[in-house]
Length: 202
View 1 (spheres, rainbow, N blue to C red):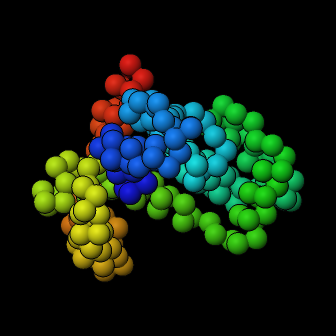
View 2 (cartoon, rainbow, N blue to C red):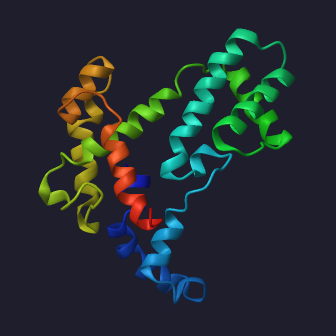
């Protein structure tokens, strides 16, 4: 929510750009808000999940979940794990993964034994829109807007109302309590269409 919905919103970019321009005059001095906003919401396939954009982020989760599911059934070696990772990345993102990147990814995944937790990232990504839309009006006029002076208050609200409830309820019940409805990707899809269709003239 902080990185994507708030940090990449028009409201936040409008607040942050003047400060960035005062620090990086040569690079940003004549950059318009529209250019800055588009640069912060650049949509393109990439190999690094933590550096991906809002639109392709969940594809990285699908890649990892698919890899976990398929590799757990038939991995015979690190080499076969790399080949499978390359195949799935190509299927979902349409790009090729360099050997070095595949080797590191395979070693991390195989060495840690951390299978099955990645889908929780998509769960949180889907919940962020309905959660933020329920915050009090004093903490921002819209789901993606948090006034600079209210950032700490918004964080405390999230801690008290949502973060502190973790593990008290099953996922479906927790989702219903924090969003007011059943778990669904609908709100996320509406947010993505509403935000990126105007940016890319779709």
